[in-house]
Image 1 (cartoon, rainbow, N blue to C red):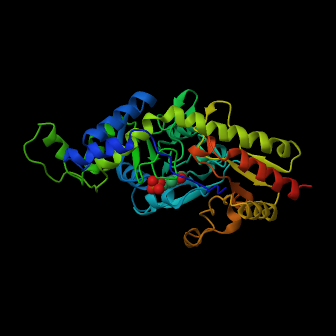
Image 2 (cartoon, rainbow, N blue to C red; image 1 turned 45 degrees about the vertical axis):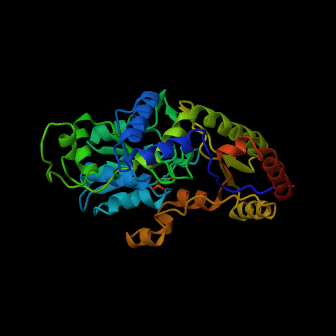
Image 3 (spheres, rainbow, N blue to C red; image 1 turned 180 degrees about the vertical axis):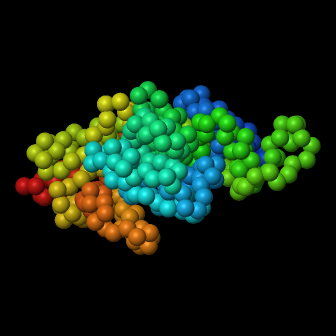
Length: 380
Ligand SMILES: *Cc1c(COP(=O)(O)O)cnc(C)c1O
């Protein structure tokens, strides 16, 4: 049996919806399937306003434009994230200020943020790694105190809840991804949630190439013109059709994925109890969306042995991110590997396990059996 790291999941209505979108003759952004998706997202999770965009990366970029990120602005973010998080702000000349993470969640350590704030700080940009929410209340209160903008990279956390509120409802801006490796797949796709009400009009202009085309569609104006900076941040209605079908099955998919979390947790807990490795701790006030599962081994060597052993059984697990501060671009910004020792150390010992919706139905037993064999070999 082959267990890939990730696999797309087909939902019931996607072919029908995509065909309907094709035949409608309206294929660009902001048509019927886009509105259906934004309505569904707002009803289900209570987002203030949702802008469907071509990717999670585009959502972060559009957020940076909306937040008016300018050359020399400092943005505080974890080093343990995907390149898109940092690129979204350095593209506009911002300086990345990397913050340490906490080992229980691999998310930004909110207690270390304030020490990094300077008069140039403009934004805090936390991520919800593996679908576990960062400590957004704490981050928002720091931001309020220092008059900063918070953009939450929710690429992995669609459907996660923090103190009873959906991830992405509390920060000023939140960026979601619907890339095929995430829980809900539009091929490529994303969404920018804008919770600051006085930013909504500008958000429409920025999404539509810096024009007020929306006012023409609404019948307010007869001709549209260039009114702001902007770009093409629109998701095609054909992809929105596929996304609608995926999001309609959120609860079913979450239930399947929760089987994987349960199975892996049971397996790894006995090793955790013996201090041989650690797994994430979901904070008491967070309900996860079951995006991923990670394990931190006691050494890089054992992490590699585990992955290699599984590969022989055609099960594909991988290390997580290479920290950004010690990557070639991080070094160009003047960082040194030793600047964030915890990030560097955990980054070397983490393993991400295969995790995809169908695995909750097929292959999980095989996977857990083989993982158990490998662990027994390593820790016998
Ligand atoms: C996947 C991901 C992105 C990028 O999303 P795309 O839709 O692939 O552009 C950004 N940030 C994080 C944390 C991600 O996991």
